[in-house]
Length: 280
Image (cartoon, rainbow, N blue to C red; front, side, top):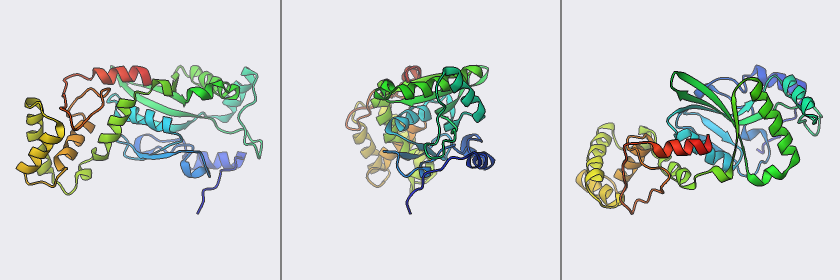
């Protein structure tokens, strides 16, 4: 059955608010817009968050890439995508203040609820703070209407004294994203099934010892573990991916992980901090 586009009316907006869309935190958050709400939005992604353990709705490859970065950074504790700018009357007023037409449904002419792409909860010394991030391809910034909407969004968060920023495809570290994509399928213990927790612990300890003391490719060290513990080929490499995903092995995520090369475990998260400055 095909997806049907939402028709925005005052009633549909009120109903959506009443149903809890745009509310909640962590696993309980319901994005204002979901992939199934539109018949076609180009390449879209449903991704199970490592932090929230809920499915996130991303409307472009770029949104997905930035999500992978934010989901891995240890100080980002929650990601709320398609976060609504409510109340609606406020963005309408801000649009008028800017001298532009507020975004509307082209069929009903009803002003629609604007959203910011990713609203982040970040842990800092002394507590938590919030960052709103709009995510756009550079070539989209040549569109005057896009810039008008971004200005409304910027003013909305300025009124609330919240940090708002624009992230573009030029700020994406492709190695970092590729590395997160490689390790995230083994983030959870259950993802390593049929390995038991006891076997995972034993393999982790041996594999860590090998990686720290042997300058051999990761895949060769994993094969040694597979042989020692009579595991199915590839089991120890999956454990290695689990250890990186859970940051038990801190590594430089800005350098592409190549299983056919030695893996360097560092004691610092400098690469995470650098990426945070670029994508945060």
